[in-house]
Image 1 (tube, rainbow, N blue to C red):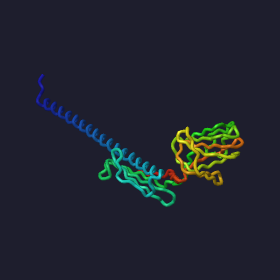
Image 2: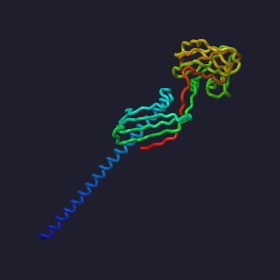
Image 3: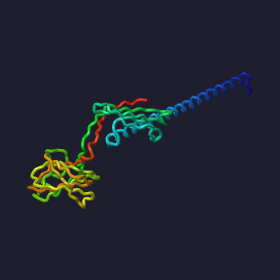
Image 4: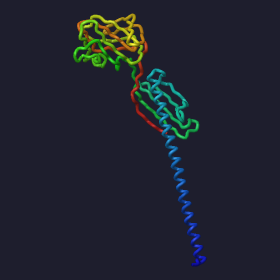
Length: 264
């Protein structure tokens, strides 16, 4: 069956239109894929910049609380992962700090992504660390519910009570080496006591030059200890709280939580 010339021409035009349509669809699809890849890459870079800024913020909080640095300190262009961060700390003068941390991908010279995290109005307090808090407590004997762990639970209304009159001891295991130069004890029926420290829970040495002040405060020469032994004599002696400190080490800076703002 023969096709007329105009029918052949129409067929060619139809094929051409189909090819053009398919090409347009393919082009649109490739463009969409390219845009998706670009968008995904940009979103990934933004996320990386955000987490790098968070890392800078965490570094600043650590430096301030551990006494490594004081407010007013900062760092610039610190490499971290695939980018860098720059941070500043500021003393607001009203017992609050402000920390600003900028995260960049790949750096701040020509960043493809940037995130800024500001934590403002961070409350600041200083206090001595009570090493007894969180230590594992044990004793030579216990009477009823007055167990050893009550001697370092932070509650003055609870207590450890010995089941015998003399030769009793209360021991605290810190789980790490702490430098001690003061204890504070509160209790009853304590006629006498000695303070000993150890690094291995085998060999104990009495602290040197202990001097007691009112309120059960006992200062002595600084000693490194993983274990603290409080040996007491008395008529079934009681200890409400046994605290331990490093006065020479100074007070620690405690940061609360401020208000967060994220920008880019």
